[in-house]
Length: 242
Image 1: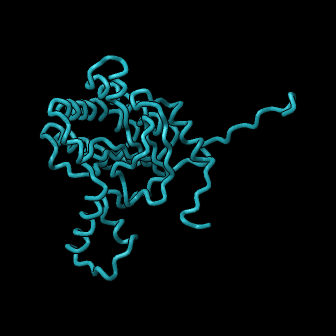
Image 2: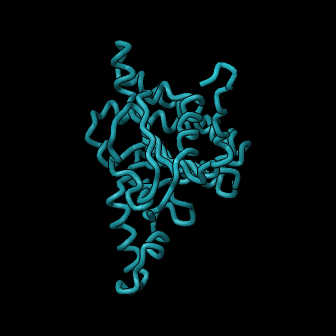
Image 3: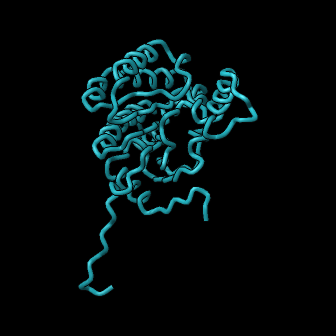
């Protein structure tokens, strides 16, 4: 490159902002271990990263954000860790309700919330009711969630509604998913460098772009979000076409 030539400017990711972003938040335990701290410290730091991300996404105008918060498989973790995780969730909901209201953010739950501990379930019910009419952004928490079980659940709901199995299409089935009425995720970010889908939005992510970063979840910042969105803006989405 000629010394007088300027570096080409990066495209502004806001010109190709995804309608729906999914995030697999991974690395809390490793973050704590590397610092000689208990795993619980990593989960607390991860909760702060959630606050930052929701704020950043609302600021840039993102309309749909889905966070993989607690999977069906996570029940196999130690009871102490599970108790802390739901305690953090309960605290988050209580502390952030005002911010959700002020920023016109609607909360949704993807998963079987009836199986959650009572305090967390009550906190969820309160925030779901209080934010039901908000329209600025939809924040979906995948809680007690399994992508495979969501598909099975949707099929059962379709049949229970009297649906003709021979007439079932992907478009019809999507109306029975937790995400009914929302667009499929355009991009899914996974932190901590792991290359796994981990049973997350299996039906909805058929044509999602994936972005994997080595950054551990508690360290994920606005800068990392913007890097992912810039990478997404440079990709050519073909949806199976040549």
